Length: 348
Image 1 (cartoon, helix red, strand yellow):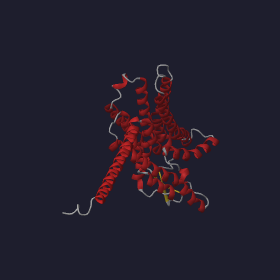
Image 2 (cartoon, rainbow, N blue to C red; image 1 turned 60 degrees about the vertical axis):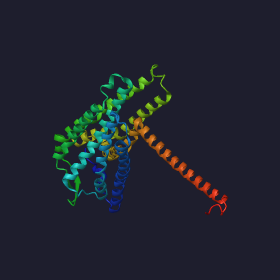
Image 3 (cartoon, rainbow, N blue to C red; image 1 turned 45 degrees about the horizontal axis):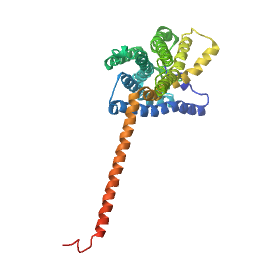
Image 4 (cartoon, helix red, strand yellow; image 1 turned 30 degrees about the horizontal axis):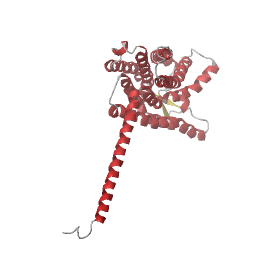
């Protein structure tokens, strides 16, 4: 549920503390830079470049907005990892944690919407026309936002700032007692894992499997190899990013919750969970950098828009070069003509 204490655990040696802090802040710095650039470009394409919008691009716009909201909170987290202290107060801590979970589970649900939309478009292209509309897509996006905000909102009601060490530094959303985990946090984890992870995972795998099975049927074998390869590439990229970013963290979160509630006390497993928790969390954070890859491979509209823009730019450059060449030719002809006219004919 929280940002890992393992990333901020003080070293015994003072010299190692600074090194560990800088290493902990390195990945959020990279995610901030790449995520900000990639998602700003994506929003620019969606809002100003893309002429044709459909239900798929509606899900992608909401996904890009979710990523940007999270990216804007990363500078605070970078400072937190580098200094091992949260001086920004209780409100910003709650906002940061809420946006983290809103982004993660919002990304999972929006990616699931894209997967289900592709499933309907390929398996039921005619019958799904009444369902696959921009109006319905906007309604689904609103339901997703309400769900993820509702699942993340309980963080507002907890005391998010806790002292650590010799009370000289403060931790953000860490060091909760076992009673809090057993009474409240474990129930929140159960809700977000079922609604925000397991159900979307089943839908993604099921929809992708049925699409792959449909593409191998004799009826669809007549489709061009290019179109089939493109669909297969979309499914592959989608599943790889989904499983890489979200499966390790959410599986580890279940064991982490069991460990914090003292339900599971196997020493070797507890050690593995403590080791993997910060690693899987950092992997999950990178989803805002990988989502723009899904935008490109999933939406043919975006690909055509980018290709059309590049073609228009090349065409404009070629026209400018042609006009410049014509102008140079005219100037050269005028100079040649002047040299052929005698001086007495050129005066009155």
